[in-house]
Length: 191
View 1 (cartoon, rainbow, N blue to C red):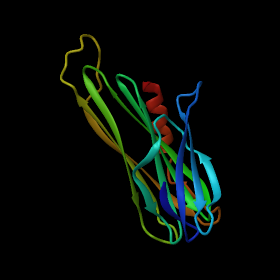
View 2 (cartoon, helix red, strand yellow):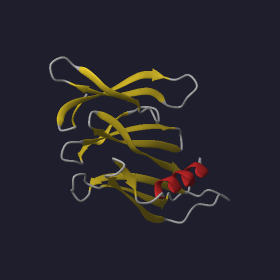
View 3 (cartoon, helix red, strand yellow):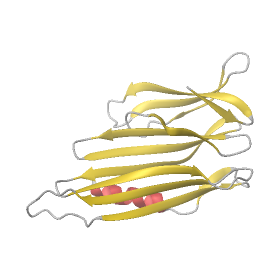
View 4 (cartoon, helix red, strand yellow):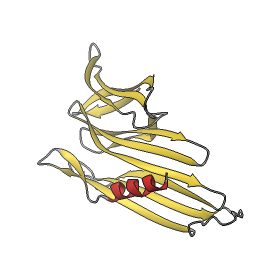
């Protein structure tokens, strides 16, 4: 459970894991928003099981407006050489849950290299709604092992930043670039 502001009121967000899905990689996880005044009352609920092992992320809450907060969940799973994570940015706005974006990151390693992607979420300039600045830092380093004929990527570092800005006319956050979609396609090609 996580206390959250929505519509200028104190609410409660509850993350409920209903278990594994037989034919899916992700678990069935619901994020529910409750009004706790008097008797608890369900305001909204959304499926946020974008991956397995879903929990509130760290940090899990960002104040983005005068009256609303941004909730963040993170789902992960891994195998021997690859780790997958999906971080969902969810706005609690006027008693509703609204998906801002689901950002996928991917770590992989082989005998010759290790590549990691780390996500950082920050609050930008404050207006009625502040910008949400999301940055993925990707590091590729040599692992120092001999791999025979296998080629390894060159050691490198890159930073990918997307700023989500409030669109007052549409009453939602919009990204300033499709860079995270491009990153997701690149990562998928590495699977």
